[in-house]
Length: 451
Image 1 (spheres, helix red, strand yellow):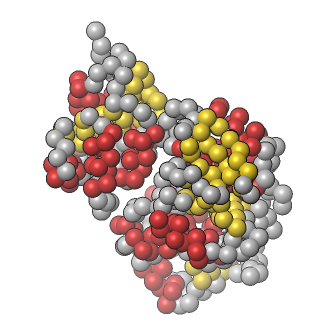
Image 2 (image 1 turned 180 degrees about the vertical axis):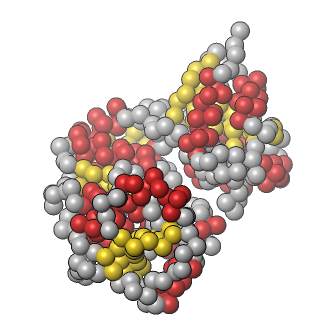
Image 3 (image 1 turned 30 degrees about the vertical axis):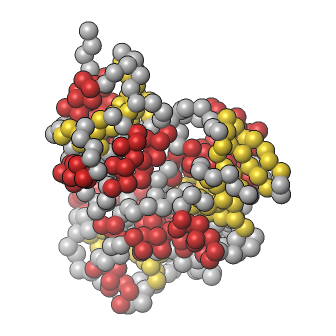
């Protein structure tokens, strides 16, 4: 599909990071721009100051919603699909896209790698960025990480590599986006308050994979039944990875070592050390690197040197033989399960927060196997407590603040225990975001008084 932008009337709905990137890019292409946002102009002053040299029409706050003149509407990924603006656009048959779809359609560079899944996207994307840099590739991290993709498109050459961390929000409004390599790390219920149901959430993740052809690669999690079944719908070349089974062909974990097996040849890539990095993420990154044809010795070297990102199984401190880990980014039960599995030994878990509609049955099963104590707080504490009692786990303690949680965990801990903040819930209601929650956890850990 060829898009023409000069003198076209294009709306940008949502003036955040991706919105600003899109404004700058479309301005370069000569489009007539209409900026739309639910916030009032005075609340957007700081953002708008970055595009003072751009001509545009604005529809802010409670201004009259007149969009019938638009040829195309580019929406910010996080805006739900049922807003008045989007309903009106659909009624007027105005094409709606996200910046990800738009970047794909206008770019001559189709050397794109998609990283998606419920958990582990940012860690895997960052790790891949380091691997590709070490392999002397010019790489751009985009999507939920790095700069806005529309800005990057104009800074890149055709041979550059784009590694795109994409959420279901971004993929929902794509139609033609087709990466060279697509990675599906995992899938479990999340963002159901946004999508409405799990089927629509999963469907949004599938789109880019379905668009791929026999010249493209899909890297898929064999351990997830839904993803494994989904592979039957694909036309791309497939590489499976597994932390649980020795695959007949693919990448797998066996006795704390990662192997690749293809054409009856087995190659050991690396011995796994306990670094707090989810093994699934390592296997996924190796799969992408293999599909791209990178030297596996480079991959091994980067993995050995790579450390977990902030708020993602981040080691905080050892106090009197007790290790503290900050996994505030663990915002759903599946993520917390993987966090518990990534660290060996006796554990105390701090969990709870905003209720996104998640169920906690599987998490409590893992708690029974992996933890000695569970400390809960936030909106979901009663829901988690009820599930814990149902499954016969009684070492559960309710608290109101992060300070109480850390103090209680430390009072229960013994030498060599691991105290892990991995809430299995969003932070809203107690904190602005998971970063603020993680920083509070680290602050409370550092404030612990010891004799």
